[in-house]
Length: 340
Image (cartoon, rainbow, N blue to C red; front, side, top):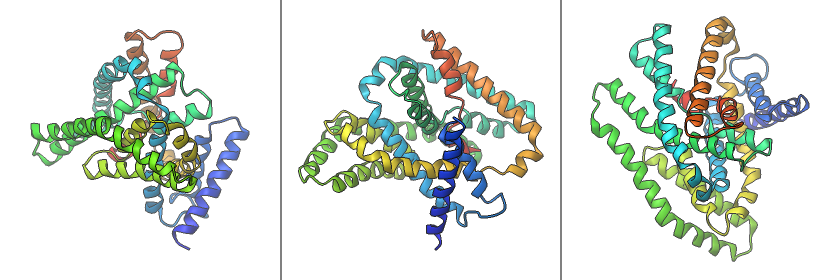
């Protein structure tokens, strides 16, 4: 059955993993990732035949997760935290790059490899943070807005840094290679805020008149994935475009309805994403290098946590927010799987 049998296996494995995680009062994400390890290519027994196709479908899951995040995370919520989201993230990124480079130097890696590692650990996983906050009913709190705002800006900031490192790899680095991606981001965001904010709600208003839930859902999904593909074609992040589409749509009269209809589709493809992450993990390799692996994980987790919590405290956030950021933003972004 090809891809169909793989999808059935992934969904059933995710279901079992999710049930076990729920039974143990653990996040569903943990169950999905462990399910991915079990059905991945590095373990025996029944495994997924075509991992690449599942990973491609998982990219849609990331896009839909961030599209729904945009629908929930309106511009009105971002404005109060713009200082920490922009200035705080910039400071955190610089300090994290220094941390990553120092770890790479300590491990004896070449300078360029250390830089790749440093950039790879800048971003927290917006998808994991969103799913965790959502499952615990904590979306909308100040700490959740700080975490999600910083995480989104982290993902945006990584784009020109990736281009910079690619330029260094090819020994053809120029200021233009950094300037072009930044200009693309600025132009795209401006177009979405001024043009997309006018035409997308008009399109949904027209479709809503037909009183067809199926057509409305298809239109909403098409908008999120279509704009995501547009940013991908421009050399930017697929998920970034989907998030911007959701953010623009959240300010319209149809934002709540769009989110409500999208949730089942988002959760199904989101499962594919988290199971796909588990498929990337090789248990045998981890066991053979358990000391180095645990050391790196501890150094990155604690180092990033200290930097993140200190940054939000520096920007005036007190009470439980620094601690929430310390623990809540530990998961590394899916971008790291591409970089590293």
